[in-house]
Image (tube, rainbow, N blue to C red; front, top):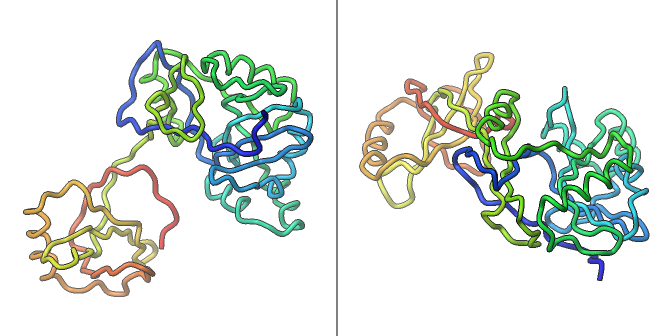
Length: 289
């Protein structure tokens, strides 16, 4: 029977890119995971099984010509200069008023990146190898002929070179999927791997979080000075042993307080004078506080 809802298959995290003739490598799109159910009408469902089709009228118009009994897996993105922009997608995903949604569907149009085909004309393809599902998917997307629905390219074998190109293009990361893998709904398996692009940069240490019940640091609060004002960019709490945490606490408690500290709700941060710098490896920076 054609499903009314489905939990998507999930990927495990891999630390480093790799080469493999058993894997295909494709872009990890920075968007909203979504499943398309086309069966006497079209439904868009996100990863939390919530129906979101009302938020994306331009996608619904593009997907209405799918054959009945078709189920696609993919990512909803908003592209900016050819790259996905998560902040712009957030503007779309948070809208509920029909007038506002219609306006944004033109000013910030969404794209559905289809990367898997789970059902086609009522027949389940989930037990087929991924490579075969990709062939069926390409045929389905080609027949749609819509710039709002795309079928992404991939390569087989040279994952390291592909990752390097993605990193240079400043895209979130790469997915590595076994070409023989079946689709197992709701499962997180190492037959699908996500490899995220990381960055290294220096930040000012502007505070710390004390470990509850101990004279030790739980995490360092990092910031940047923007236009003469401090902006909190996040915490770092890994990479320290217990001896270092105690030593940091003894040193940081001797420093003066930070003048005009940023306002951060829900965090018990002890602000300190920004005389120290930390070099941090991170995946992305979202909006400053």
